[in-house]
Structure formats: C-alpha cells, structure tokens
Length: 208
Image 1 (cartoon, rainbow, N blue to C red):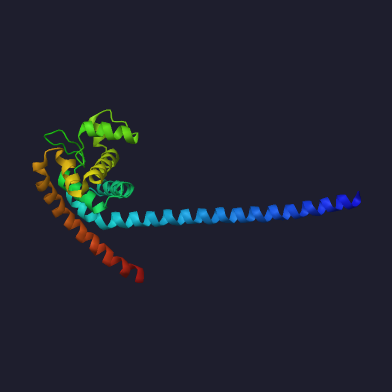
Image 2: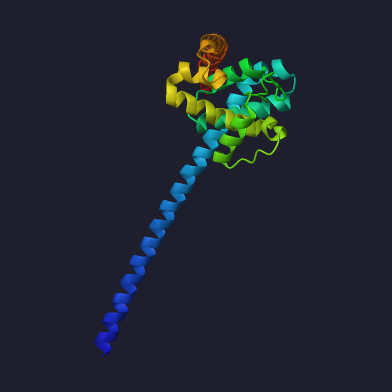
C-alpha cells in the first residue's frame, strides 16, 4: 500500500507541476494578447489625435469653433474607418453638403453635416440601433455622421464611387450626378493635398 501511496503522491506532484506550467503559459499568452490590444488602442488613439490636429485648422475655418471642429473630425475619423471610406472623401462630402455647419438645412429638408434626409435617417438609424424621433436626433453630430457614412458606403459599394456619390446626393435623378461629383472631387483634391503634406511631415517627426 505504501508503494501505491508513494506512486500516487509522485503522480499528483507531476500533475501539479504540469498544471502550474500550463497556467503560467496561459497567463503569459493572455498577458501578451492584452498588451497587443493595448498597443493597438494606443496606436489608434495616436493616429486619431494626429488626424484631428492636422485637419483642425482647415475645419475651423468653416465653423470658427475648435470644440466643434474637433468633435466633427473625431466622428469622421471613427466612422470612415468603420465604413471603410477614405476620411478625405467624407470630409469632402461634408464640405460640399453643409460647409461643416451642423445645423445646415436644405430646401429639400436634408439636415446636418452630411445632409441626411429624415426618411434616410429613420431607415439607416433603425439598422444601426439609433433612435431617430425628431429632426434634432438627425442634427446630432455623432448620429448624422454615422448615418451619413453608412448610407454613403452602401451607395458606393452597390454602384461604384461615381454613381454612388451621385445617388447619395440626388437619388435616381442622374442628371445631377456629374455636377455633384465634380464638386466633391474638387473639394477632395484639397483634402488629399493636405493628406500628402501630413504624410511628408510624419517621417520628419519620427526622426526628431
């Protein structure tokens, strides 16, 4: 019996060591995964901060408010990434649609930064879990840019950029597409030039 007890004790000791090593390894993997996630969050935060800092002077020229400009750029950055749109394209659309005025309202009833029609706001908002109960919900900067980006991305994904942009603006009235595309492309060229300046400035900052 003593031999059996001794063998069991050795087996238990071996299993304990194996369990301990497994736990340490699992904790190490979890720690590494968490550190990777933290690193990604920091990188994303830094990229977003650089985006806001770089485009802030340009957006501020339109609405004269640092806080509003920062808020707009923040939601544009987040939602353009989420919808896989170039942020410079979204900025160009906002410039053409509203001149960065969150309270803009067209004769047709389109509202806010991205000139979202109320029916579009309700429809797309319901898909996103965003309650649209009044015009004020569409004027809200976060709601407006989120809904506008999702609708714009849907249009482009279904019809390509040229027709998608046109449909975003004019629906089925194709005779308005070219004029709108020309306006957006002109604005986009300015934003792309700023983006190019940003890209050229980044290596200098890294080298300092």
